[in-house]
Amino acid sequence: MSLLFVSAIIWMVILTKKNFSIIETLVFCSFYLISPIYIFQFNFVNQAIGIGIGFVLTSLAIYHFSLILNHDCEKFKNYVASIVYLFLCIGIYQSFIILFAEGVIFLLILEQLKNIKTNLKVIISILTKILFVSLAALIGYLLISKVIYIFIGESHYLANVYEGWHSNSFSEVIKHLLLYFANILISPLSFTYVLASLLLICFVRKFSLIIMLALLGCLALPFAFAVFLGAPIPLRILFPIPLSIAIVMLLIFRVTSNKKLIIAIACLCLFVNFKQICQLTYSQNMVQKYNEYNLEHLYSILHDKFGNKLYNTPVVFIASPKADNSFYIRHIYSEPFYFNSDEDFLSNVFPDKMWQTSSINHRVYYFMQWLGLFYKLPTEQQIELGKQISPSLAIFPEKGSITKKNNIIFVKLSE
Image (cartoon, rainbow, N blue to C red; front, side, top):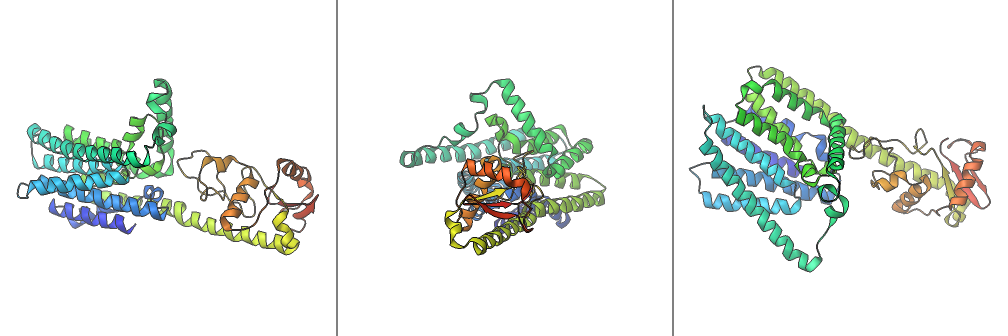
């Protein structure tokens, strides 16, 4: 997260050079820095470092591109710097090209705000520069990728996972995309995005047609890969969304006379975003620790009761398929990518859908392995026996919730 703050500092420098006030910069940063979308990037240490570096490199690429538009700066060095930084960040994650596009569109809008009338010559000139930098970085990335594939072999991950336009019918692709976008819009994470879109519509008369189209493009760009691939994609690639919202809210704040209203809206969004972040991180981490503690506690009870025989004796855990209202298996806040799914205590260890639909005993087995505990996986016949004797058992931790029959240990966690 510290690298994200570094990128925000670079943005503060850009905004300062563009004569934005401290209040305007704070409004921008409140939307750019505080967003639950980032949780999907910064959940894991290695990924967080890479993504954080990508944010810094993209911000630097945008900064040097802003200097290209400044006639007093040496353009050649800034062209090279912008291309190199963009090339490096695309190598980390291809979605950074969208983040860069949003940033340079913002610079284009600022150039247009200087002029009373729309200057097509200036627009074409800036778009040409954007295209040149983007193509140079992309060509460099593709060439290096081809060289690397000689040594490590080309990955067909996208072709295998996201079938999209090249294999599905047009109607099927449209159906999947509409469902994907609808699910995103109804998710709690969409509050700030929808609010920014509605405010932009309310202030449509404050902007020229060109600027309005550019701002709508900023809001639409984060979903570009989904349309390009023709298939739903995880929310973790949508990290350009906070920047698009920050750009829209900053420009609305600049053109409106009722600045207190926008500040109040920014405070409301901060509150909502903090709440979402807490639900996605703090509470989930606490549930994870709670699950680890209780599973280890349950294991120690079994070990005290059966001794080392536990290592070679299958244990059948009896629980509801949805794992609701059980002692240590809790329904946690669902990851938005898997809409309308029932997640359990293993979802944040093994987030693949396979772990959500497999039997409770398989999930416990792999969780035990992850904790470094012994647990013999029961057979299907032994699990069926557990279902038969389940009505006669109490629910853990009550007395009579643990029993041993036919050299099988049964533990009832819920009905």
